[in-house]
Length: 288
Image (tube, rainbow, N blue to C red; front, side):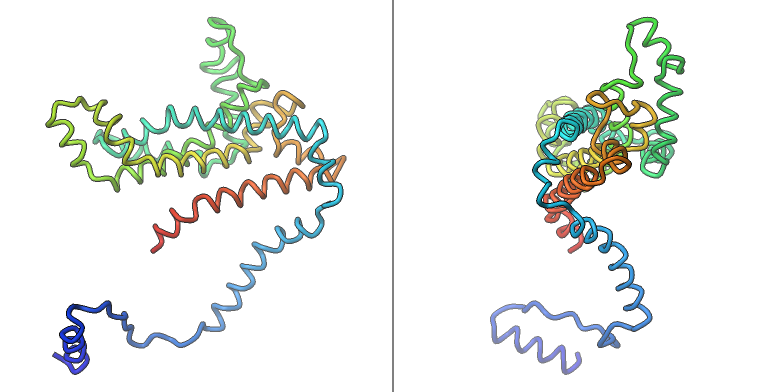
């Protein structure tokens, strides 16, 4: 035992129990190396400067008039409705999919997980083209939807929901799957020993345990759906009042009315900040 350990043991004896010791790291540098500090500061400025420019150049005096205009209000209302509907679709389909990936073992599970997360890295425009080829009037499935049920998804409000759900659902699946893997499966096993079916155990035991993860994934999916652009404009088009969401309205207004584009961008920025604020406790807990 070294002198440091002996002094800690003596202090524990005097205080009546073990103390929380400070972690000592040998050779820890006293400052930040300059070759790391300069790129870090440049990266921070690179990320923050566009957002600061948006705030500086915002037409604050005309902002109420811009946000209450008919075109902006239609885009805002449609975006909120479609993003909420897409989140609902993601919850109905994504939570069971996350449970399947986390709780069952089947051949090719890793490959299926890779396919589920593919929309995260797939260019949104490519996703829109894929949706057209699958659900368009001449698509693999869309032709049967049109001929059998008279359902046409492209260039409709329902098409906006489908496009947003396609790009947003992986966020929810990843969040819920991670929460399921962290949850103790013994609670479900105890419910099974008491006679509960697997679905009853999932509904009465598992869902309350993973509710925070579901909520976090739903918020992320909703925010992603609200900001979706590429797949929406490719699959649903850009028709005011029907398929023109806020990102599409920003793109169109930037050519004709920059003040309206800035106003809509501020709304999206405020939503993003609200999402970060709502999830800060979860992220800080995971990081600590």
